Image (cartoon, rainbow, N blue to C red):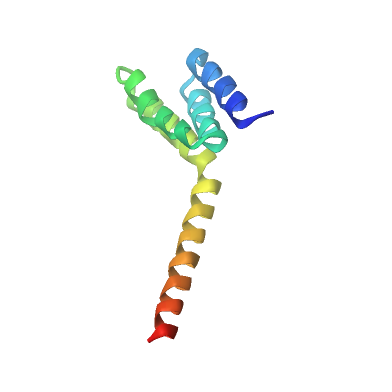
Length: 93
């Protein structure tokens, strides 16, 4: 399945999801399929703005929990690239 198709399917499921945790997990999955899926996090919070605080925290927590492995990997890669850049600059001096 192509990432665009998967992201579209997750978006459709997100639109019909009634439970905050399920919707948050779907938003996180959409991010894993396509980086633009991160926009579902603020959209979902805005969509549930009249919900109780518990539902908002559950939505955001589920989304971040699903996104976490990719975010951690990106941070590690960025740190490694930054260290490599510093080492190259130091070797030129």
